[in-house]
Amino acid sequence: MATMAAEKVEMTLRHVEDGFVERLQATLAARGVEPAALDRVLAGEPLVRTLRLLDSRGAILYPRAVSDADRAVARRLAAAALAGRGAPGRRTIVLDGERWIVVTVSARAADTLLAAFAYDADVLRRDVLAASLASLESATIFVVVDEQGRPVWAPASLDGAERLLSVAFRDALPNWQLAVYQPAGNAPREAVRRQVTIFMAAFVVLCAVIVAGIAVTWRLMRRETEMARLKSDFVANVSHDLKTPLSVIRMFGETLEMGRVSDEPRRQEYYRVITREAERLSRLIDNVLDFSRIESGRRRYDIVPTAVEPLVRETLEAFAYPLAQQAFKVEVTIAPDLPEVPMDPEAVGQALANLVDNAIKYSAEDRVLTVQAHVDGDDLVLVVADHGIGIPRAEQVRIFDKFYRAGRSETQGRRGSGVGLALVRHVAEAHGGSVTVVSAPGEGSRFILRLPLAERGAHGDA
Ligand SMILES: Nc1ncnc2c1ncn2[C@@H]1O[C@H](COP(=O)(O)OP(=O)(O)OP(=O)(O)O)[C@@H](O)[C@H]1O
Ligand SMILES: [Mg+2]
Image (cartoon, rainbow, N blue to C red; front, side):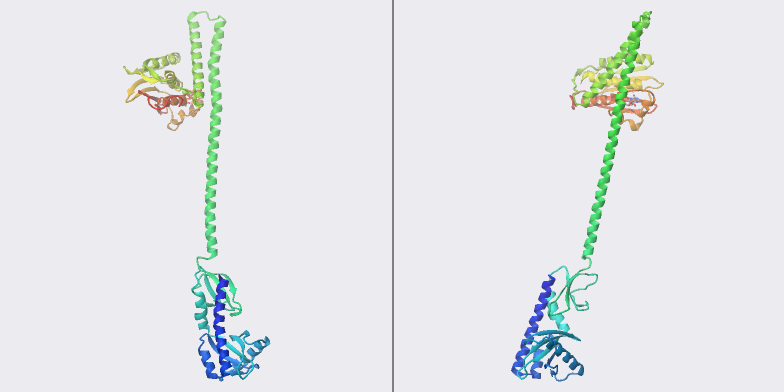
């Protein structure tokens, strides 16, 4: 675009110049060197400010009134122009105080004359440069600069603008250049700065994403490690829980086998211990098997209308021995006229057994077990409460998670696999009900199992 603009200036200038030289030549051919006629030619072309006609030695033929300095310039112009000798119309540019264009012309009387003329700078700016360049539609600014690089013509202020490139005019304006400027704020440096800012922002976002990714991965890894630890604890706890009743059964069995126990009441007591430990074993194995069924999604529930009171009493029956042995005060309150409730009796019995087992296991000095059954709204509510060690608030949500055992239970020597409450919750939810806990450390716990009176919610292998 800059090259085309320079070409346009060049062509405009050459057009004016050729017209002038043609008129001059015609006048000279018709009238010879006649000052009045030449004055008219000069006046007819505003772009040309000064005109001299010289002979081949550099003597000034027109105008008449000239200074010595003018004569010296004229000689130098003639010398420079004739050094390149040529046909009429040949054109030489000489910089001597002014920018002189020297062309060979012929007049009637003389053979060959030299016409030297110089432009009027203001007219050049207004009629040529402004006319050719001002109309250019561009985001950049086109500026004409002289041989010293000073702007000769600019369409707008160059404050803060940045020079991008420049192209030379060919022979119409030798040594001058057309420079292209980028307006302030639009400069490439500005654009680069903007791009750098965008890249930096993108980089920061990328870093943030990477950091977030690392954090998430780290948390996942921690959760996985925690789960792996819980699982290995689970295996250790289950093995231990299996071994304890087995060794008791074995010890009492062997004692009886040896026939050393002579009195009948002691023998009866030993049989009871064996039965109780065997019951404990099957409860534990049921728990683990059910848990594994739940985990693999194979646990099914057979929902049938069930009488509540016998279920509660039977469950408690299984704990009669440990309750009696540990001198528990047992308070059972079952509301009269409870309707039959749709449930899987085995599953609910097992859930209840887990709650009672916990109440016994996590008891303290004050050994009280409260079991209640009543209707509240549309639900059957089963409550198992104790005056035991209680559960800190922070742990109350997590105890229903699989494998989770509150930290203190271990240190207090109470073993367990940590799946009991996970099972209770699964049973409750499979019946469309819920299990919640109200507890405070040192004050005991109250587990509330709610089962809907009418079948609702998901059940089966939920
Ligand atoms: N009645 C309770 N009083 C105090 N803490 C309890 C009580 N019931 C449960 N917890 C706490 O909740 C944790 C989870 O109980 P959960 O029954 O699921 O597992 P567990 O009793 O440790 O093992 P198991 O699977 O053999 O029942 C227990 O480890 C215990 O810390
Ligand atoms: Mg338990």
